[in-house]
Length: 77
Image (cartoon, rainbow, N blue to C red):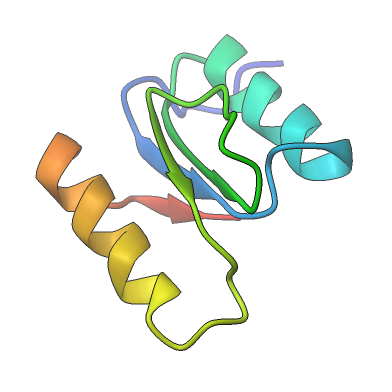
């Protein structure tokens, strides 16, 4: 399915397992630039932020990593 996401920068939280991982894979298949996040150090994104999203500083850390790599964020899942 073509979602029109080629070259869009997509951040997927909780993407080291389960539904989040499947979403990250689908976005990559669509040609999106994917930033993955999760508590595990392993992620499939071009950029991966290993962090706990429930911590106050984590959202800022994710935004900094994504914008440093790509200059923007187009999508958040």
